[in-house]
Length: 406
Image (tube, rainbow, N blue to C red; front, side, top):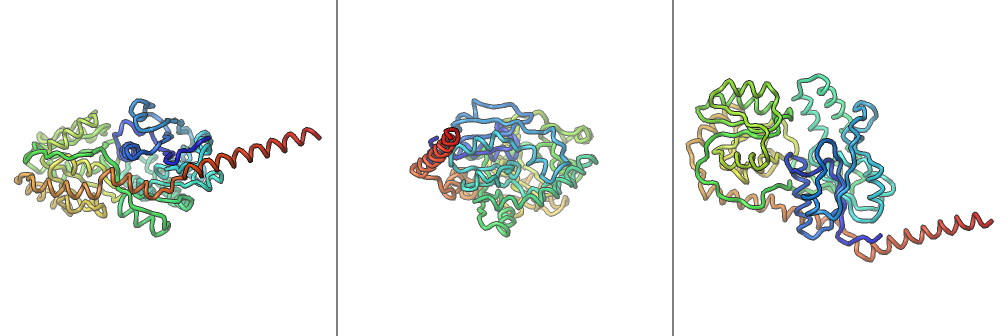
Protein backbone atom coordinates (compact mmCIF):
# COMPACT_ATOMS: atom_id res chain seq x y z
CA UNK A 1 0.00 0.00 0.00
CA UNK A 2 1.78 3.07 -1.24
CA UNK A 3 1.74 6.30 0.75
CA UNK A 4 2.32 9.62 -0.98
CA UNK A 5 4.71 11.95 0.82
CA UNK A 6 2.08 14.73 0.96
CA UNK A 7 -0.96 12.68 1.88
CA UNK A 8 -3.04 13.40 4.99
CA UNK A 9 -6.08 11.86 6.64
CA UNK A 10 -8.68 14.34 7.93
CA UNK A 11 -11.31 13.07 10.40
CA UNK A 12 -14.32 15.42 10.58
CA UNK A 13 -17.01 15.34 13.28
CA UNK A 14 -19.71 16.14 10.70
CA UNK A 15 -20.14 16.37 6.93
CA UNK A 16 -18.41 19.71 6.22
CA UNK A 17 -20.63 20.77 3.34
CA UNK A 18 -22.62 22.92 3.20
CA UNK A 19 -20.27 25.08 5.26
CA UNK A 20 -23.07 26.76 7.17
CA UNK A 21 -22.09 26.68 10.85
CA UNK A 22 -19.03 27.32 12.99
CA UNK A 23 -16.99 24.11 13.09
CA UNK A 24 -17.73 22.87 9.58
CA UNK A 25 -16.89 26.30 8.13
CA UNK A 26 -13.38 25.93 9.57
CA UNK A 27 -13.07 22.35 8.28
CA UNK A 28 -14.39 22.97 4.78
CA UNK A 29 -12.19 25.97 4.07
CA UNK A 30 -9.19 24.23 5.62
CA UNK A 31 -9.68 21.37 3.16
CA UNK A 32 -9.87 23.91 0.35
CA UNK A 33 -6.67 25.66 1.50
CA UNK A 34 -4.69 22.44 2.08
CA UNK A 35 -5.69 21.15 -1.34
CA UNK A 36 -4.50 24.41 -2.90
CA UNK A 37 -1.11 23.77 -1.25
CA UNK A 38 -0.87 20.40 -3.01
CA UNK A 39 -1.93 18.02 -0.24
CA UNK A 40 -3.56 14.71 -1.10
CA UNK A 41 -6.52 14.52 1.32
CA UNK A 42 -8.41 11.43 2.49
CA UNK A 43 -11.53 12.71 4.22
CA UNK A 44 -13.37 10.70 6.89
CA UNK A 45 -16.72 12.07 8.12
CA UNK A 46 -19.32 11.19 10.70
CA UNK A 47 -22.83 11.88 9.47
CA UNK A 48 -26.06 12.18 11.43
CA UNK A 49 -28.70 14.32 9.76
CA UNK A 50 -26.76 16.15 7.08
CA UNK A 51 -26.74 14.67 3.60
CA UNK A 52 -23.71 12.90 2.20
CA UNK A 53 -21.96 15.20 -0.25
CA UNK A 54 -19.75 14.08 -3.10
CA UNK A 55 -19.71 16.80 -5.72
CA UNK A 56 -18.34 19.64 -3.59
CA UNK A 57 -16.02 17.69 -1.29
CA UNK A 58 -14.46 15.69 -4.15
CA UNK A 59 -13.01 18.95 -5.48
CA UNK A 60 -10.50 18.92 -2.62
CA UNK A 61 -10.25 15.28 -1.52
CA UNK A 62 -8.86 12.12 -3.09
CA UNK A 63 -11.46 9.94 -1.36
CA UNK A 64 -14.48 10.38 0.90
CA UNK A 65 -15.51 7.97 3.66
CA UNK A 66 -18.69 8.25 5.73
CA UNK A 67 -19.35 6.70 9.14
CA UNK A 68 -22.72 6.73 10.83
CA UNK A 69 -22.60 8.43 14.20
CA UNK A 70 -24.04 6.24 16.98
CA UNK A 71 -26.57 8.76 18.26
CA UNK A 72 -28.65 5.96 19.80
CA UNK A 73 -26.12 5.59 22.63
CA UNK A 74 -27.26 6.58 26.12
CA UNK A 75 -25.48 9.92 26.74
CA UNK A 76 -25.21 9.31 30.48
CA UNK A 77 -23.59 5.87 30.43
CA UNK A 78 -19.82 5.44 30.69
CA UNK A 79 -16.95 7.80 31.36
CA UNK A 80 -16.40 8.94 27.78
CA UNK A 81 -18.08 12.17 26.67
CA UNK A 82 -21.09 11.50 24.47
CA UNK A 83 -19.67 13.62 21.63
CA UNK A 84 -16.64 11.28 21.58
CA UNK A 85 -18.28 7.93 22.39
CA UNK A 86 -20.80 8.35 19.57
CA UNK A 87 -17.93 8.72 17.06
CA UNK A 88 -15.96 5.54 17.62
CA UNK A 89 -16.10 3.68 14.30
CA UNK A 90 -13.91 0.55 14.03
CA UNK A 91 -14.11 0.92 10.26
CA UNK A 92 -12.43 4.32 10.56
CA UNK A 93 -9.56 2.87 12.58
CA UNK A 94 -9.12 0.09 10.04
CA UNK A 95 -8.80 2.62 7.21
CA UNK A 96 -6.37 4.83 9.14
CA UNK A 97 -4.07 1.82 9.64
CA UNK A 98 -3.60 1.22 5.91
CA UNK A 99 -0.77 3.73 5.47
CA UNK A 100 1.53 5.92 7.53
CA UNK A 101 0.24 9.35 6.49
CA UNK A 102 -0.36 12.01 9.18
CA UNK A 103 -3.84 12.26 10.67
CA UNK A 104 -5.72 15.47 11.43
CA UNK A 105 -8.52 14.95 13.97
CA UNK A 106 -11.02 17.81 13.70
CA UNK A 107 -12.11 18.57 17.25
CA UNK A 108 -11.96 16.63 20.50
CA UNK A 109 -15.15 14.98 19.20
CA UNK A 110 -13.13 12.80 16.79
CA UNK A 111 -10.38 11.58 19.15
CA UNK A 112 -11.87 8.19 20.07
CA UNK A 113 -8.92 6.46 18.32
CA UNK A 114 -6.25 9.04 19.18
CA UNK A 115 -4.59 6.75 21.75
CA UNK A 116 -4.99 3.53 19.72
CA UNK A 117 -1.78 1.43 19.97
CA UNK A 118 -1.86 0.80 16.22
CA UNK A 119 -1.51 4.58 15.64
CA UNK A 120 1.27 5.05 18.18
CA UNK A 121 3.94 5.85 15.59
CA UNK A 122 1.77 8.08 13.40
CA UNK A 123 1.96 11.87 13.44
CA UNK A 124 -1.39 12.98 14.87
CA UNK A 125 -2.76 16.53 14.89
CA UNK A 126 -5.82 17.60 16.86
CA UNK A 127 -7.56 20.77 15.78
CA UNK A 128 -9.29 22.17 18.88
CA UNK A 129 -12.37 24.24 18.03
CA UNK A 130 -13.01 25.16 21.66
CA UNK A 131 -12.00 24.37 25.19
CA UNK A 132 -14.87 21.95 25.08
CA UNK A 133 -15.64 21.64 28.80
CA UNK A 134 -15.79 25.45 29.06
CA UNK A 135 -18.09 25.55 26.04
CA UNK A 136 -20.46 22.93 27.47
CA UNK A 137 -20.50 24.67 30.83
CA UNK A 138 -21.68 27.82 29.07
CA UNK A 139 -24.30 25.79 27.18
CA UNK A 140 -25.59 24.57 30.54
CA UNK A 141 -25.97 28.15 31.76
CA UNK A 142 -27.82 29.24 28.62
CA UNK A 143 -30.15 26.23 28.40
CA UNK A 144 -33.63 26.56 29.91
CA UNK A 145 -34.85 22.96 29.48
CA UNK A 146 -33.99 20.73 32.45
CA UNK A 147 -32.98 17.57 30.54
CA UNK A 148 -30.61 19.40 28.19
CA UNK A 149 -29.25 21.49 31.05
CA UNK A 150 -28.44 18.30 33.00
CA UNK A 151 -26.88 16.70 29.90
CA UNK A 152 -24.61 19.72 29.33
CA UNK A 153 -23.52 19.65 32.99
CA UNK A 154 -22.57 15.96 32.88
CA UNK A 155 -20.93 16.32 29.46
CA UNK A 156 -18.83 19.29 30.61
CA UNK A 157 -17.42 17.27 33.51
CA UNK A 158 -16.67 14.27 31.29
CA UNK A 159 -14.95 16.54 28.76
CA UNK A 160 -12.83 18.15 31.48
CA UNK A 161 -11.51 14.74 32.53
CA UNK A 162 -11.20 13.46 28.97
CA UNK A 163 -9.13 16.38 27.71
CA UNK A 164 -5.92 14.63 28.85
CA UNK A 165 -6.29 12.37 25.79
CA UNK A 166 -4.49 15.21 24.00
CA UNK A 167 -1.18 13.96 25.44
CA UNK A 168 -1.30 11.38 22.64
CA UNK A 169 -1.32 14.11 19.97
CA UNK A 170 1.93 15.19 18.33
CA UNK A 171 0.49 18.62 17.61
CA UNK A 172 -2.47 20.64 18.93
CA UNK A 173 -3.73 23.39 16.61
CA UNK A 174 -5.79 25.79 18.73
CA UNK A 175 -8.27 28.11 17.04
CA UNK A 176 -7.78 31.25 19.17
CA UNK A 177 -5.01 32.94 21.18
CA UNK A 178 -6.95 32.32 24.42
CA UNK A 179 -7.34 28.62 23.66
CA UNK A 180 -3.66 28.44 22.75
CA UNK A 181 -2.72 29.74 26.21
CA UNK A 182 -4.96 27.14 27.85
CA UNK A 183 -3.57 24.14 25.97
CA UNK A 184 0.06 25.39 26.07
CA UNK A 185 0.06 25.16 29.86
CA UNK A 186 -0.49 21.40 29.66
CA UNK A 187 0.81 20.42 26.24
CA UNK A 188 4.00 21.96 24.87
CA UNK A 189 3.23 20.88 21.30
CA UNK A 190 0.54 23.57 20.84
CA UNK A 191 0.38 26.17 18.08
CA UNK A 192 -2.11 28.93 17.27
CA UNK A 193 -3.82 28.26 13.95
CA UNK A 194 -6.42 30.94 13.11
CA UNK A 195 -9.87 29.95 11.90
CA UNK A 196 -10.34 29.13 8.22
CA UNK A 197 -13.26 30.92 6.61
CA UNK A 198 -15.06 31.71 3.34
CA UNK A 199 -13.49 35.13 2.79
CA UNK A 200 -10.72 35.04 0.21
CA UNK A 201 -11.11 38.64 -0.85
CA UNK A 202 -12.57 41.89 0.47
CA UNK A 203 -14.68 44.35 -1.52
CA UNK A 204 -15.43 47.87 -0.25
CA UNK A 205 -19.18 47.81 0.55
CA UNK A 206 -19.73 51.57 0.28
CA UNK A 207 -20.10 54.25 2.96
CA UNK A 208 -23.67 53.56 4.11
CA UNK A 209 -25.74 50.54 4.99
CA UNK A 210 -29.46 50.21 5.61
CA UNK A 211 -29.98 48.66 9.06
CA UNK A 212 -28.47 47.10 12.19
CA UNK A 213 -27.92 43.34 12.08
CA UNK A 214 -27.45 40.50 14.53
CA UNK A 215 -26.93 37.07 12.94
CA UNK A 216 -26.21 33.56 14.16
CA UNK A 217 -27.63 30.03 14.35
CA UNK A 218 -30.67 30.81 16.49
CA UNK A 219 -31.15 27.18 17.54
CA UNK A 220 -27.96 27.45 19.61
CA UNK A 221 -28.79 28.65 23.17
CA UNK A 222 -25.86 31.09 23.21
CA UNK A 223 -27.08 32.86 20.06
CA UNK A 224 -30.73 32.77 21.03
CA UNK A 225 -29.94 34.36 24.40
CA UNK A 226 -27.72 37.02 22.79
CA UNK A 227 -30.47 37.92 20.32
CA UNK A 228 -33.08 38.22 23.07
CA UNK A 229 -30.82 40.44 25.16
CA UNK A 230 -29.96 42.72 22.24
CA UNK A 231 -33.64 43.10 21.34
CA UNK A 232 -34.65 43.97 24.89
CA UNK A 233 -31.73 46.24 25.73
CA UNK A 234 -30.58 47.82 22.44
CA UNK A 235 -32.66 47.29 19.29
CA UNK A 236 -36.03 48.09 20.89
CA UNK A 237 -34.62 51.37 22.22
CA UNK A 238 -33.19 52.68 18.93
CA UNK A 239 -34.92 54.55 16.12
CA UNK A 240 -33.51 52.46 13.28
CA UNK A 241 -34.38 49.35 11.31
CA UNK A 242 -32.97 46.23 13.01
CA UNK A 243 -32.75 42.67 11.66
CA UNK A 244 -32.28 39.41 13.56
CA UNK A 245 -31.14 36.75 11.08
CA UNK A 246 -30.60 33.04 11.55
CA UNK A 247 -32.22 29.66 11.12
CA UNK A 248 -34.38 27.65 13.54
CA UNK A 249 -35.34 30.43 15.98
CA UNK A 250 -37.44 29.43 19.00
CA UNK A 251 -41.04 30.64 18.90
CA UNK A 252 -40.39 33.03 21.80
CA UNK A 253 -37.81 34.92 19.77
CA UNK A 254 -40.17 35.33 16.84
CA UNK A 255 -42.92 36.59 19.14
CA UNK A 256 -40.75 39.25 20.79
CA UNK A 257 -39.54 40.52 17.40
CA UNK A 258 -43.16 40.93 16.30
CA UNK A 259 -43.78 43.32 19.21
CA UNK A 260 -41.54 46.02 17.73
CA UNK A 261 -42.18 47.80 14.44
CA UNK A 262 -38.48 48.42 13.80
CA UNK A 263 -37.33 44.82 14.36
CA UNK A 264 -37.61 42.11 11.71
CA UNK A 265 -36.61 38.46 12.01
CA UNK A 266 -35.39 36.58 8.91
CA UNK A 267 -35.14 32.78 8.91
CA UNK A 268 -34.56 29.83 6.56
CA UNK A 269 -31.69 31.68 4.93
CA UNK A 270 -28.95 30.33 2.70
CA UNK A 271 -25.31 31.16 3.43
CA UNK A 272 -25.33 33.60 0.49
CA UNK A 273 -28.42 35.33 1.88
CA UNK A 274 -26.74 35.77 5.28
CA UNK A 275 -23.67 37.21 3.55
CA UNK A 276 -25.86 39.68 1.64
CA UNK A 277 -27.46 40.83 4.88
CA UNK A 278 -24.02 41.36 6.44
CA UNK A 279 -22.82 43.36 3.43
CA UNK A 280 -25.87 45.62 3.40
CA UNK A 281 -25.93 46.38 7.14
CA UNK A 282 -24.51 49.66 8.38
CA UNK A 283 -23.57 48.10 11.74
CA UNK A 284 -23.17 44.44 12.63
CA UNK A 285 -24.01 44.23 16.34
CA UNK A 286 -22.68 41.08 17.98
CA UNK A 287 -22.92 39.99 21.59
CA UNK A 288 -21.99 36.84 23.49
CA UNK A 289 -21.99 35.65 27.08
CA UNK A 290 -19.11 33.22 26.60
CA UNK A 291 -15.54 33.70 25.51
CA UNK A 292 -14.87 30.36 23.82
CA UNK A 293 -13.10 29.54 20.57
CA UNK A 294 -13.38 32.12 17.80
CA UNK A 295 -16.62 33.65 16.60
CA UNK A 296 -16.71 32.98 12.86
CA UNK A 297 -19.73 35.23 12.53
CA UNK A 298 -17.50 38.10 13.69
CA UNK A 299 -14.91 37.27 11.02
CA UNK A 300 -17.65 37.28 8.38
CA UNK A 301 -18.93 40.62 9.64
CA UNK A 302 -15.45 42.14 9.43
CA UNK A 303 -14.68 40.76 5.97
CA UNK A 304 -18.04 41.50 4.38
CA UNK A 305 -19.61 44.28 6.43
CA UNK A 306 -19.07 47.82 7.62
CA UNK A 307 -18.90 48.78 11.28
CA UNK A 308 -18.89 46.14 14.02
CA UNK A 309 -20.10 46.97 17.53
CA UNK A 310 -19.46 44.15 20.01
CA UNK A 311 -19.17 43.37 23.71
CA UNK A 312 -15.74 42.50 25.18
CA UNK A 313 -16.32 38.72 25.34
CA UNK A 314 -16.89 38.64 21.58
CA UNK A 315 -13.32 39.76 20.82
CA UNK A 316 -11.26 39.21 23.97
CA UNK A 317 -8.00 37.48 23.06
CA UNK A 318 -9.01 37.10 19.41
CA UNK A 319 -6.65 39.61 17.79
CA UNK A 320 -9.69 41.39 16.33
CA UNK A 321 -10.08 43.98 19.07
CA UNK A 322 -8.64 46.88 17.04
CA UNK A 323 -11.16 46.32 14.23
CA UNK A 324 -14.27 46.61 16.41
CA UNK A 325 -16.00 49.19 18.56
CA UNK A 326 -16.34 47.58 21.99
CA UNK A 327 -19.13 48.41 24.43
CA UNK A 328 -18.99 47.20 28.03
CA UNK A 329 -22.65 46.59 28.86
CA UNK A 330 -25.81 47.26 26.87
CA UNK A 331 -25.93 50.99 27.59
CA UNK A 332 -22.43 51.33 26.13
CA UNK A 333 -23.36 49.18 23.11
CA UNK A 334 -26.42 51.37 22.51
CA UNK A 335 -24.28 54.53 22.72
CA UNK A 336 -21.73 53.06 20.28
CA UNK A 337 -24.49 52.10 17.84
CA UNK A 338 -25.97 55.61 17.95
CA UNK A 339 -22.52 57.10 17.35
CA UNK A 340 -21.70 54.91 14.33
CA UNK A 341 -25.13 55.35 12.75
CA UNK A 342 -24.07 58.92 12.02
CA UNK A 343 -20.73 57.97 10.43
CA UNK A 344 -19.74 56.90 6.93
CA UNK A 345 -17.71 53.74 6.53
CA UNK A 346 -14.70 55.26 4.79
CA UNK A 347 -12.35 53.64 2.29
CA UNK A 348 -9.45 54.46 4.63
CA UNK A 349 -11.14 52.49 7.43
CA UNK A 350 -11.75 49.62 5.00
CA UNK A 351 -8.10 49.59 3.84
CA UNK A 352 -6.80 49.41 7.42
CA UNK A 353 -9.13 46.50 8.18
CA UNK A 354 -8.15 44.67 4.99
CA UNK A 355 -4.44 44.94 5.80
CA UNK A 356 -4.95 43.60 9.33
CA UNK A 357 -7.10 40.65 8.27
CA UNK A 358 -4.80 39.65 5.40
CA UNK A 359 -1.90 39.34 7.82
CA UNK A 360 -3.68 37.60 10.71
CA UNK A 361 -6.43 35.52 9.11
CA UNK A 362 -5.34 34.49 5.62
CA UNK A 363 -6.38 30.93 4.71
CA UNK A 364 -3.23 30.58 2.62
CA UNK A 365 -0.85 31.45 5.46
CA UNK A 366 -2.89 29.25 7.83
CA UNK A 367 -2.53 26.24 5.53
CA UNK A 368 1.18 26.88 5.11
CA UNK A 369 1.68 27.12 8.87
CA UNK A 370 -0.08 23.81 9.47
CA UNK A 371 1.91 22.06 6.74
CA UNK A 372 5.21 23.44 8.10
CA UNK A 373 4.46 21.81 11.47
CA UNK A 374 3.71 18.36 10.04
CA UNK A 375 6.66 16.06 9.18
CA UNK A 376 5.26 14.27 6.13
CA UNK A 377 6.97 10.92 5.57
CA UNK A 378 9.24 10.72 2.56
CA UNK A 379 8.46 8.28 -0.24
CA UNK A 380 11.37 6.09 0.92
CA UNK A 381 9.98 6.03 4.46
CA UNK A 382 6.55 5.13 3.14
CA UNK A 383 7.97 2.34 0.99
CA UNK A 384 10.06 1.02 3.89
CA UNK A 385 6.96 1.01 6.10
CA UNK A 386 5.07 -1.01 3.46
CA UNK A 387 8.02 -3.42 3.01
CA UNK A 388 8.21 -4.03 6.75
CA UNK A 389 4.49 -4.82 6.85
CA UNK A 390 4.92 -7.17 3.87
CA UNK A 391 7.88 -8.97 5.51
CA UNK A 392 5.96 -9.26 8.77
CA UNK A 393 3.09 -10.82 6.84
CA UNK A 394 5.44 -13.29 5.10
CA UNK A 395 6.94 -14.26 8.45
CA UNK A 396 3.50 -14.91 9.94
CA UNK A 397 2.53 -16.92 6.85
CA UNK A 398 5.71 -19.02 7.08
CA UNK A 399 5.03 -19.77 10.75
CA UNK A 400 1.45 -20.70 9.90
CA UNK A 401 2.57 -23.10 7.15
CA UNK A 402 5.27 -24.61 9.33
CA UNK A 403 2.70 -25.33 12.04
CA UNK A 404 0.54 -27.35 9.65
CA UNK A 405 3.51 -29.23 8.17
CA UNK A 406 4.28 -30.81 11.51
